[in-house]
Image (cartoon, rainbow, N blue to C red; front, side):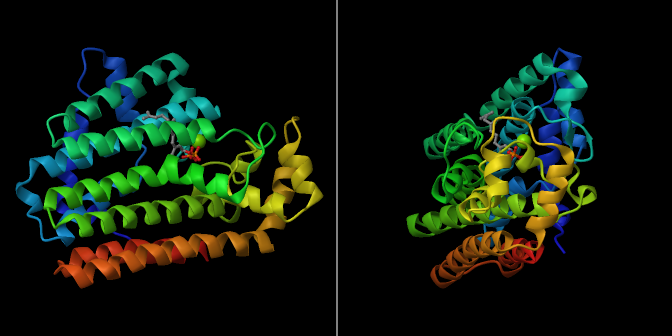
Length: 323
Ligand code: FPP
Ligand code: MG
């Protein structure tokens, strides 16, 4: 069981995030607070803090670390606001999506606002972190724009993984890389942490793609099979197409929208299929890669064991949830 909220410093990060919602326009505050109060694991700031702690960095006295962790979560929030508009999403975390509740224009502006707030937190930091943040934000945008529906563009496993690397793993990487940079353990360890973050992010995205089919609507907070409905180049969808199933080709490559019953049948079929077994195998390979980076780090530097174990638990959590 994951218990990220037990991290004392996470409360500081959450307070700073709320402070950053301050605005002359009450509507901006309302939309940002609405999204924030929908909850979530705060996994990006959590891994940022855990990375620094694992490297014996004194997290309680570093405002820079709190700024980075808060900035990354603010960027993540901005992407969710924009993503729901792009996906025409009605639900987020069991509730009305901000887009449905507040409308396109105000949700779009709130995303812009959060992004600027995030940059104000990172701007005073070392150029290394500023450059890494720019790189991650560019990749996020690339990942989202490359995620063209399967009915419009041909995708492969490689292109699906490339999209996941950009749209999800980039922020995980940024969280670990920035925290490691602040702790100054030397270039090799920073590189391993950066690669750890990326692999963990890949495992998380692969898990997300699998859960879209295997998890109940109750657990997901939105309808199962959403990736099928949206004909997304998710790992599961590209593997399903690759299996040669004519149903996959009909549902995912055709222009016409897919009916609720067809999605329910597809979800039912996929749950027990080789497609999910193959997706789990790929997801597990990223988790294993993340684990091996941690092993390498522990050979190079003396780590703070509880925080280091926290990072290991995150990888195990990914593997367990896949089953
Ligand atoms: C969620 O994907 C979306 C992302 C992880 C990335 C979204 C990126 C953008 C909208 C680009 C904008 C960039 C900036 C810097 C603001 P999903 O639809 O698969 O997941 P979901 O189920 O949570 O909606
Ligand atoms: Mg979405």
